[in-house]
Image (cartoon, rainbow, N blue to C red):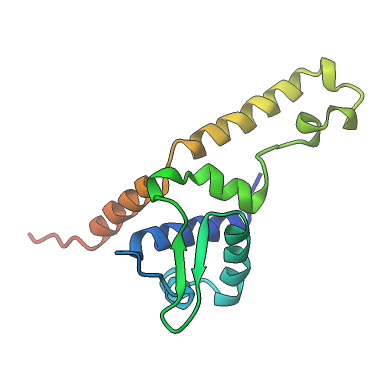
Length: 148
């Protein structure tokens, strides 16, 4: 299983938005695209989906941009990834048992179901606020100079 660029870039862009919006000032999509090294056109598509699903709001005008629609502490990685990628279902028979004649008596289906729920559990355990702090700590370590 692979998370597509839509899910990966969407999570990074949301972390960037959470880190750079301050005092209710919107963040320009072009700034997020530049900082994250992502095509602005691609981010427009991603942000359109996130806006439609109520995670962000767009502010129009010269001083417009994007804002989180709720606090970063209330938005989980799972929410973002599920909106952009869909639910974490590794095989079709987990959500649609009728796709396979063996679904009801298949032990491997139970494994796929458990694995999908564990992935979602891990993603649900991280809020945007926590991810921003984690990123700041990683960035701080990268910029540390050691003198001998």
